Amino acid sequence: MNKLTPAQAAALRRDPIRHVVWREDRLDVLDQRLLPRRVVYVSCRSARDVARATADMVLRGAPLIGCAAAYGMALAARRGRLSDVLRAEPVLRRARPTAVNLMHALDFMLDVARSGPESTLSARMNEAAERYRRDDVEANARMAELGAALLKPGSRVITHCNAGALATAGIGTAVGVIRAGFLSGKIAHVYPCETRPYLQGSRLTLWELMKAGIPATLITDNMAAHLMKTERIDAVIVGSDRIAANADVCNKIGTYGLAILARHHGIPFYVAAPSSTVDLRTPSGDRIPIEERSAREVVEVFGTPIAPKGARARHFAFDVTPHALVTAIITERGVVSPADGAALKKIISTR
Image (cartoon, rainbow, N blue to C red; front, side):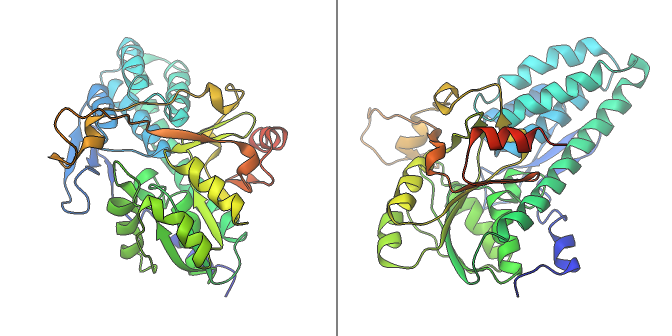
């Protein structure tokens, strides 16, 4: 079977994991730091709470960061004062520097805030935040269908980090493609990389795949080359936190290395990301700010030291893959193949 049935297509538009729940007076967020051992929700009652949850990795994933920021702005508008919204915006904007979806969501919500009187401010912002979430759900589903169509039946694929439901408001970007591919008989097996140092692949992606019943085998990050050389791997599918105007792709640290390995072994390298991840104001990948997080996340695992006391470490959270190494960029507006800045701009500018 190579085409999704109407029921399967509809399933791509349902949230498989209730990880962000909007209550209008608060945003309940599934604490991803505790998965898969514990399922605990954190209640955010202000924009500052949302910013803290974002910075502390309670929630992560570029599209989800954007959706959470939209709700954070709605929380700031509860008292119906534009000044509260304007004060909240820079607090949210500073939460994470690399994921451009955050900036996209805040710009969208600012436009909504300024579009009418304060008497309707709270209602407008609530509706806008919900619309932003619905748009992400639909974008995920559309990307999933477009991406699955690129795969050959029975594919065995590698994915990196977590670009699934936990990173979005819907079924995910890269993992959304995998879900659709599995439903349509295009994917036989998935190899998620563990994704050091935060282990999103082992803790989150593998958890999602197992809950969905998709055959998956965890590999450490440094196993990918050996697997590509000794076994059949048909594609690498990843998400993105920001795509520059020239189609360079910024994603979780380790993605660039996977792209180089895929090119050497003749394996297609696909990037799935919504149009909100494309930053046409950033000309190339070397202009994307790369977040460097605490070295503590490298020298410890869940609070347990794994390096000598006093050890130094670096923790770049992201890297940039040159567009020449990308086989295709999958967006909800279409597929750009090969990855090219002019073609990307044309698709993103199409409404």
